[in-house]
Amino acid sequence: IPFKLPVIDGDAPKEFKVGAHGRGVVGRIGNYTDSCYAGELGHVCRAVEKRRREYSSGRHFVRIGLMSLGVEKVAIPTGARRQPVWPKGVIGSIAHSDELALAVVFRSRQGVRGIGVDVEAEGRVSSGLRSLILTDREILHPEMFSRQSIDETLVFSAKESVFKAINPLVGAMIGFREVEIHIDEARSSFAAQFVGPGLSNRLMNEGVGRYTKSQGHIVCMFALGDMKTPND
Image 1 (cartoon, rainbow, N blue to C red):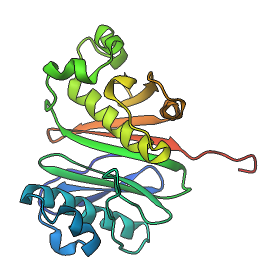
Image 2: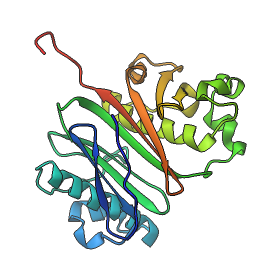
Image 3: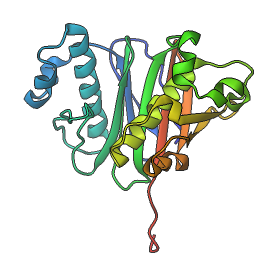
């Protein structure tokens, strides 16, 4: 799913297209608690201000994207696994760094059955965390990343986007060392391969990811296409 991140040159969030049917919204984190619904605020009523700003920015950006899809503004509550609960007929994903928030939404059955996004400040993940994030094969074979050195933050972000796309579909937790990322630097794309136990998580092997680096951040997006029926 191709996407091009807009330049953030002010406080106002900006929209962008995600493939042919999706909408993305990205912008600086702000205080949007006044635009939140009661069912949303209950999740962060005791949180520190930083968390309330992150949470409210993500929900506000989601509703901007939904309006672009012709979907009325609704609450996006938080589920038992701390995941966004999407309205019927919509799938999406929310992410944030310390500075930016990002939301992507699609109508169901428009070519995508799972979507995950992540945004990280470049260099956020240090090499000291390599053994926690990468598999032994990834550490020994950096050519999997189309380069001789490993960008730990990019691999971390790619895996986070994979988790967000897969978990709502299979409901199973996935460890960082249960996933291997193969990066095509020339195309700014990546693939995921599940190497852990649990057949359901192998669904990620069918997906495709894209990434971009912009304004000191890495943004990764991973998508699974709709399953086709014999009559499609």
